[in-house]
Length: 109
Image 1 (tube, rainbow, N blue to C red):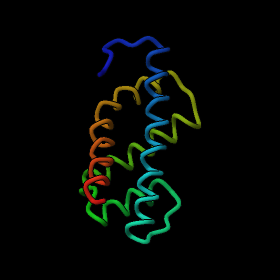
Image 2 (image 1 turned 90 degrees about the vertical axis):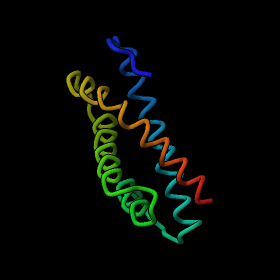
Image 3 (image 1 turned 90 degrees about the horizontal axis):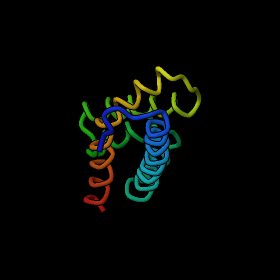
């Protein structure tokens, strides 16, 4: 659900929820890749590339996931009002990708 005109508290809460959710999902994928594929990978971008290699992501989805990592890195390490507004506007395209990521891991278990 997207709030059309969020105030700064709503926007910041959504961004923080995105950060927490992304962290949980990429670490879940990291563990899954280790257990199921024998891959010991340490970074979110490497996990995404490996998920592409094992068929969890298409090329296009992997590119979007890498964009998502970049946005997560920006939200964690910098705060800028204009940047927060910009990243908030992209959250709606990240949600379906994160849902698919978890669904695919569950299907391959």
